[in-house]
Length: 305
Image 1 (cartoon, rainbow, N blue to C red):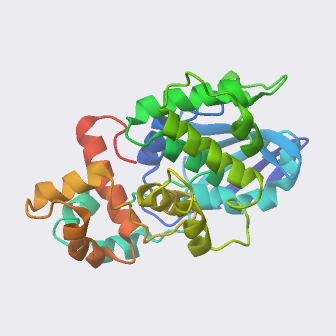
Image 2: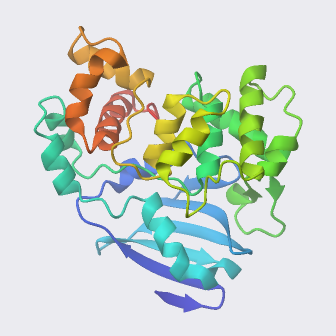
């Protein structure tokens, strides 16, 4: 780690292979307008940590097997503490050779892993942000969800005065702000708005300690599933990306269901598919990423997830 006044640089290693372009494509297709951006081969967002704000910029090192995270602003003083969440977000602790070898035993997955051996499960900076995105994204396209998320930021977020990067000059709404804001004509059905604000209120009140370091994934799964409008797909998607559950499997995801059915037309519903998908344990989240990625590669677009 190196530091200057209000600037810190971390070099965080990974085990190769590491598919940086697809990781960036995934983040870029889902970037919250005003809060985060993928530009010039880098991921960037405004961050707050322990009461200090700053800007995080992450790039691939041109030569070494590591990513380079620059933290500008007062948050740079927390660089050592920030190393762990950044590593989780970019899935740096994965062992792609081990995961790939085990999944490649399946003839469906073998060609996908051969084509993209370094595919990662993209994480999330904030579990709260990810659940908001997942609720907004229910039954709409990735692009439509991104548009609505941008409106939420404008209504309930906070503009950062004097921020140096226009594309990341907003703070994502706090749970309390999102719970209280008027979401009339935001572009979502009333029941989904109610689900979103009910979730935000549950986080704001502490009933769902989403970004706590002490809550375990099983209790968080149960707490989320108990909320109106949040089902198994949302919970498993969040488990994949925010809680780093390598075996999470969003069984009711339409793209995953279609991908499996295309390979075996007798397997239509998740209940019928389970015998096959259970053979991918304990790496089902990576299997999901490979199936989503196959569709995204074919479509040249940000489908899946």
